[in-house]
Amino acid sequence: MEIRARYTLIGIFTLFAVAAAFAFVYWLNHAGGLTKQALYRVRFENTVSGLLKGSGVQFNGIRVGEVVALHLNPENPKQVTALISIDHDTPVRADTKVAIAFQGLTGSPVLSLDGGAANASPVTSTDNQPPLLSADPDAGQNMTESARSVLRHIDAVVTDNAEPLRSLIANINTFSGALARNSDRVDGILSGLERMTGGGTQKASAHVFDLKAADAFPSLAKIPQGQLVVPEPDVVGSVFNDQVAVVTPSGDRATAFQAKWPDTLSRLVQSRVVQSFENAGYLKTLGRQPDGLKIDYQLLIDLRSFQVVMSETPTAEIAFSAKIIGENGNILGAKLFEARIPSSSVVDEASAVAALNQVFEKVVTDLVVWTCKTA
Image 1 (cartoon, helix red, strand yellow):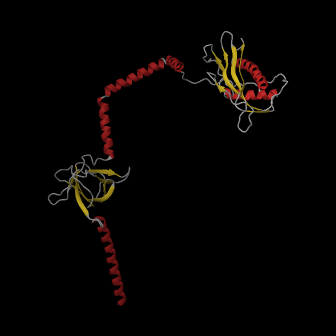
Image 2 (image 1 turned 90 degrees about the vertical axis):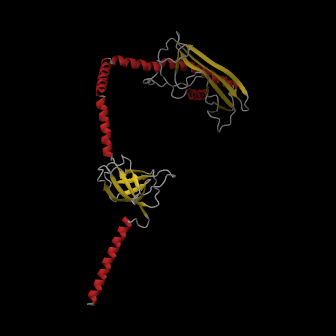
Image 3 (image 1 turned 90 degrees about the horizontal axis):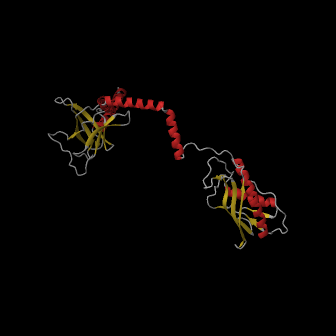
């Protein structure tokens, strides 16, 4: 008997504990938990589709309570009154705006409160009822209804302007038909505009041509001593620095010629001048850059002209000035080198480059010999 009585007490205690736990959870969720709650009424003049008892209440995006009850107004079928329980410290004012917000695309709706002005008066209760807040007339309109409303407006606009739209479509058909019938003329007009503005696809360079170093030199009685450095020449005036320049007598580039050098003209001339000195065999030490070398002489070159002029008698011409600078910066010598070779056979890019190579061989030979005699 004592064992049965003990089991009975344990069962009663367990049931009491479970009931107390349920009661605590209910109080925590419905009576506001450990914070003091305030009740408000919210009146909607439209549908509150999706809003349920227990839906959350947010103030400026922060959850402050929940919907306690929803009531219909028997005297006005359009009105719905929601009773909400929120934190007592929530700053609800007379100008607080009420709306229904959706949490994400598929989330449940919540009642949203947006704070008003700080100096606005608080909401007061009347007739011993919770304070009343009035929602925006469109607060309960969901996204589907909004889309339907927009579609109805679009349909109304299209219906009201059906005749002008028919005329517009007919004009578009007429215009497109006219373009189709005159497509050849349109292509011609566009091609003319491209030529006028310099647009369109640029013609690719036909060939890349090289410049040859001089390799035939006379013997010298006296060979200069010391180290010579040939820096990269400076480009002066309108010298084309990367293209084989074939120009008209006025100096404009001849568009029929699109040949290019393998490098910029200044670096190409530097390389071929150094090679010419090496082919001559006059100097024992020769360099391109002064870094790391004891400089006895520097040969400074300024390119002034390097082109073929397409006149009645096509002429290849090259002109550059050269200075020899000593170890102390003194100018040991200066000279202008220029040469022109008339030729009636310059009719294409290969002939133009051949003529320039012929002139370059002459002036570079003179440059090497003059430098070695002057240094």
